[in-house]
Amino acid sequence: MNTDVLVVGGGIAGITAAVEAAEIGYNVTLVEKNFYLGGRVVQFYKYFPKLCPPQCGLEILLRRAKNLRNLTIYTGAEVKNVSKGGSDYTAEITLSPRFVNDRCTSCGKCVEACDVSRENDFNFGMDTTKAIYLPHQYAFPNRYVIDQRNCKGVECSKCVEACAYGAIDLTEKGKNITIDARAVIISTGWKQYDAEKIHYLGFGKFKNVVTNLMMERIASPNGPFSGRIVRRSDGKEPKSVAFVQCAGSRDENNLKYCSQVCCLATIKQANYLKTLYPEIKIQIFYIDLRAYGIYEHFLKRLESDRSVEFIRGKVSKIDELGNDNLLVQAEDTLSGTKVGREVEFVVLATGMEPSSVASGIKGVSYDENGFVSDDGLFSCGVAHKVGDVSQSNQDAEAATLSAIQLLRNSGVRK
Image (cartoon, rainbow, N blue to C red; front, side, top):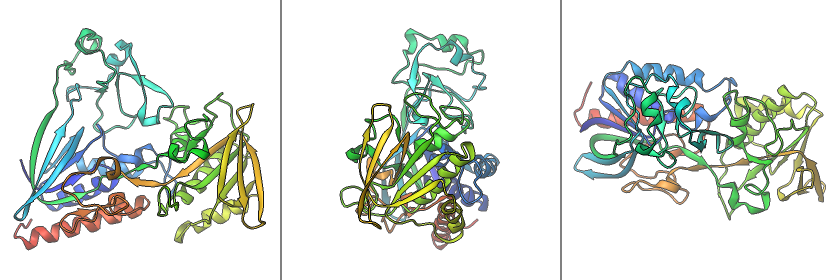
């Protein structure tokens, strides 16, 4: 299979790059390892600067993508290797079986028939779905998928019997394909840093300690609690919440760099809480706060709220008390004293780690932190550097322009 531009990764940066190149007239192939497009952005409740839900920007992008006949999209597709031969690149890709074809109408009859449950990884295991499921409410493609790790397969077949459209094939096999491309854009995105590595913060040990990405899902109307921000231990609405900044970031033992967006995420999530529960008490433990440019007024507004306490100090330990409350301990570096705050809920502002750290593509060069550093390939989004959604989109447009320039210089014009 031949293409002008291969885009690896279907998050918001990858979709932007693919659509921009295809609208100019180049043949583009977009591959995404998940069974849906949108990456991390679709897991957000809202994003800056307008504080609107992710569907606002993604809907326009996906509508543009649907109208492009020269854009080929593969989901459930993982690039294993990229090699260069002359002026072209060859990518080896594994396609995982979805077990549901494009005759699916998302009617939901298969879900009603299924009696096997699985942890919902989209919601970070905070709820469950059936073994046949729609990845999320706004999934593109809007088609069910079967979790082969939990499905009983042909020995059950209840979903097959329930489907009136012949859309389910439990015998489907995965396959490998090879794509030759003139230019490659890597946009493999990011994952939240593993908070269990920061053992003294209690994540994975205490239910009421969550990460900032989990908080996005908790706050979302299509999340595990239908938009109610509650404690995982008892479903109770918290009256006090602590945010722990730089949870693993700017740390020689974890992520050495600043992830740039964590302070903004906390400001945004504190706004979620104040909107739902105006009387809630919030403590923010920080090293320093970075709300650059147009985002400064969000921070100033939060600082003016007397029910929000800012404590300048790195958290040293979180313990659980007998009532499922949590004791957050830190040293206040402004006063030089040790402080402790009892709260009902804790949110860890975990950093952004390039996805390549866990699943690096062979043939692609990375720097010491896992960001793409290959001179021959183009990269964008958090595969290239940390940044927010608008920065990632700008980065994608820059990568696309560079790829187009390469194609034109090699004689491929549209």
